[in-house]
Image (spheres, rainbow, N blue to C red):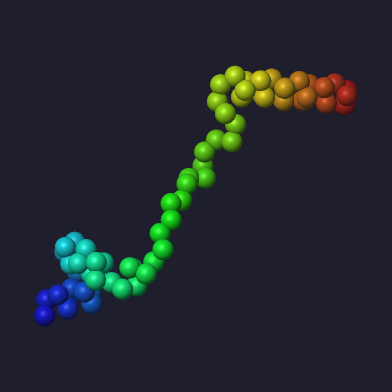
Length: 71
């Protein structure tokens, strides 16, 4: 009877992790889920090092040329 009460109350499940794990293992819906590996999207787009420095220098040259053209 305690298992039924704790399974019906999600806050009681926080106090009993073994019941949660047992429920997960018995769940048919979770067994049918397809899993996939997701890669993080927050990786830097520009490589660090020499190429990044060269890109910044090129950007500065372009900005300087544009500001010279405006004056």
